[in-house]
Image (cartoon, rainbow, N blue to C red; front, top):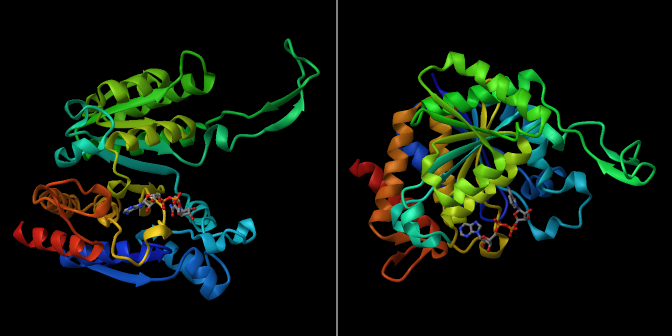
Length: 360
Ligand code: NAD
């Protein structure tokens, strides 16, 4: 069966890095078909909208989306609904992408890039599964009102509502367990069940879902402790599953453990296993078109695409091993370059990954 991949390069360094990732996918000789459409500022320039109907239609039809990045200063003065970044929100909504997976991997060769001691982070390999469409970010009621009770009754107060429906918790818990199954079979659910009703409910549902996954070891941790453990002993984790608010914070904390923004892939999935795969960084307009961008986050996003949307784990392993090999050979783009290593450009890094794949 041929799998259709929607290629949405976007703006800034997007086209350069996506080109390298597409070369790597093509070299694996899998049954993939690629179709490309503009997105973000590039789509606005061509069609007058950051997510035009042709792009959205392709994204819906495809099994997975390989996404570069969107955004450029030249579009900053556009009305909010026409800004490039709206394309990502539009895709999330249209495809129901409720699960965000962000791995934080620290290759031993890059251990010096972290602000933590190398012996604490070297070899780190965790995934944070964050619920993306619910929680206090979207709960209603919300707003500013006159406080109805309490010591400040009658004063103006701001308020939001934290809420999770059972279906929302069940489906993100399943993604957490399934992700753990594809890795080291350890899942840590992070909540604040000692204080929040929503969190106690979350924990009860996660424990219930765990009955379908007896092969995965489940643990629970309060979010304050998780924030500490991530900097104290991050290698204790395999997969963390958590809600939107806690995941927002913990996934950025985990990303910083690695210190290299050009190395971090991400995936956003829906219930049908369709996914959007993109690097965690932005469109880096400051270095666009100069063969300076690190394509590895996008190449690793392509590897996640194979693993999570196409269930081609072995092919994904091949990409990840090739990336490890080029790092071991001492090749580095400017963002991760250190004395004693060889500096290469975007294109040359792509070439090196292709060579490493062939040696596999
Ligand atoms: P950015 O991530 O684009 O860049 C931050 C810094 O990191 C820059 O110095 C950049 O040169 C560097 N950098 C980023 N990716 C790199 C790579 N692959 N290789 C080497 N260096 C890299 O963040 P920003 O500068 O705050 O935002 C620039 C634009 O990107 C804005 O328009 C913003 O809205 C957009 N943005 C888009 C996304 C997305 O598409 N998902 C995410 C974040 C920001």
